[in-house]
Image 1 (cartoon, rainbow, N blue to C red):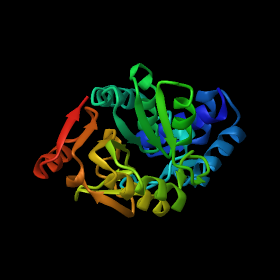
Image 2: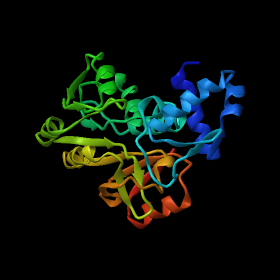
Image 3: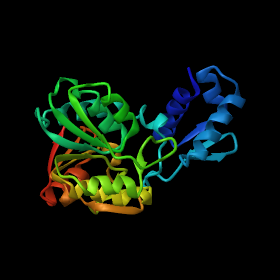
Image 4: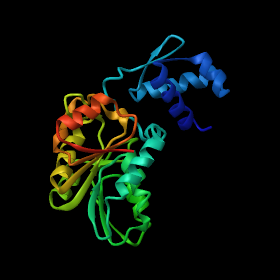
Length: 254
């Protein structure tokens, strides 16, 4: 097992148990306690845990944090695949749309090979590399400043490209959807770009697994009632369903 895979599994245990012990993790993964401490140091450096004597504690579960891509791709994978399959039904041949940066939109990008003459705009480097292989897809990559560990582009260059276009749909991700209906982000530099991709589309579709609900992310992107459709998974709580229904937001649970 490579370190990134082991760290993703450790983070999953943190999410489930709130605290993990070095000795128990070393035994489970059949590595030394030194290796586990290095893993926890890396996870703490990414802002996803707090190191304690003999182990680590998960950060406040009600506050979204910046999650490196190597961890995001191992989280809620089945749910993201189901969300992506549902989103694919909304894309027709010849459509133009924006794929926001993120692991759920990347899951959707993996399914686009059977679509013809579509135009895809993205600020996600991994999505761009994948779609560049398909001659049937017209790819527009925003350019901009690359962010470490998350493979997204941001800044004035990316914003300028988005501000100059109009598309049929935007498939947007979110760091957090608070119980008050605010969709927010943990990185302030991304917020203006998020607002631009909202304005560029005739239809805004939010792809968000259930773990994103009832969290806050510090920097407001928009209100939930600005979204035309939410696609999420069956882990969504009754409280979150009630929020969507009270705001008149259409949603699909997969």
